[in-house]
Length: 177
Image 1 (tube, rainbow, N blue to C red):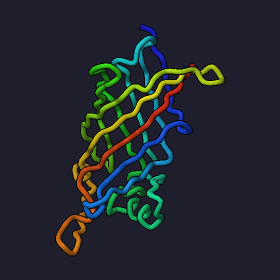
Image 2: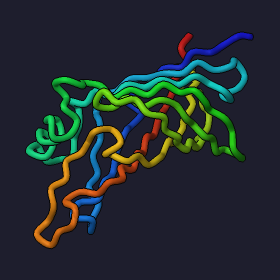
Image 3: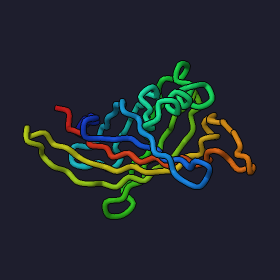
Image 4: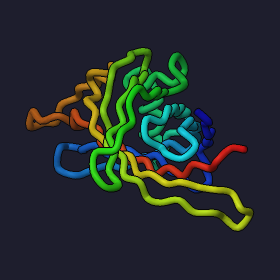
């Protein structure tokens, strides 16, 4: 069976996360440096193998002091664990343009299975004739399951930051000839 290799185009992709602050509002951040790709059947993306790596030092929440704290051992410990990686083990169509993506996420040295939703956005040729495919990938993960145990409390006894982290990745893949 012929396969097709795909590579993530970082100039036309983004990886964001959202987490509650004081459990009353949401903070959005992104990872500005990442790479990844996929291998699929030549005619179909069903059962594709997908891999991804995020550079923890590229975290950006628009507040340098907060970014530095997130890179510290209180959170991601970027010095010891400079990358967050994902390796798929399952990618299948659920209905229409909706897929389920599951695999192993490694964050802060802890590897756990996660399941994400992926919505197919379409396939197009760019101005140079390259075939591109787009997906929006979303999901929730528990930060404490991955060793992000920072638990400062507010004066009223509430959590300073929420437990669940929402992931949103808009990914454009380019066929690699």
